[in-house]
Image (cartoon, rainbow, N blue to C red; front, side, top):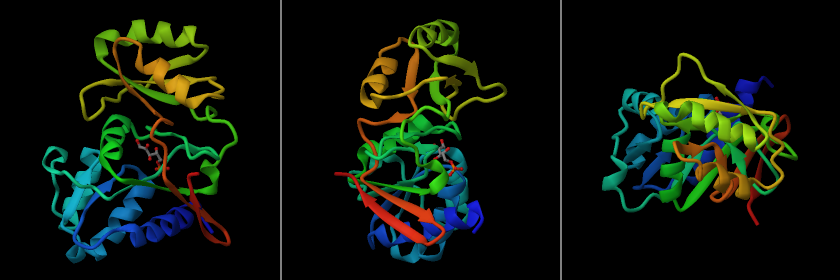
Length: 220
Ligand code: 5RP
């Protein structure tokens, strides 16, 4: 199977988690796009969706799925999204697509985070994938110095502005043995909006697409 076929298989499996009549939290990226396309087929069974990026909002709208502002939503039973890396505790690195802040906000409201991945995203220790950090533009240099003090090698994502008007520093060379602590530490740096560690609120369920089928792994 190709990687795209695996991503699609995980995304299709996530459709079983969608509750009839509900509003669905929707992530960002190529795996989430397969989920959006599946959701399009069952759009008459849901009220609509909250999107974690402008790109996902556009794709949802193209399928005729009603979009809700998160501020108008009190119940979000499920949030479905991909990841750049995921470990055995279902902590993740996200933000390869630059949507980490909105993803973290929508995920925080949802009762259940369903992560959809192919096996290439599974790691023992997070950090091979550079950790995205969204930063207020005027704080870029000062945040980069602080990240270097934490042992990372921050690189500005060139030619990229987030949906919130900010920049991304991709932090290389981190070996993240305590993701909860590092998530907190980076969030304490003045000028950081969010970092791409989803450890305090990791996934509740991982749908992992393998060549022999989609495995369901629940957080302990
Ligand atoms: C976007 C994300 C994505 O979930 C992550 O980058 C995985 O993307 P893909 O499904 O394309 O591999 O966090 O900000």
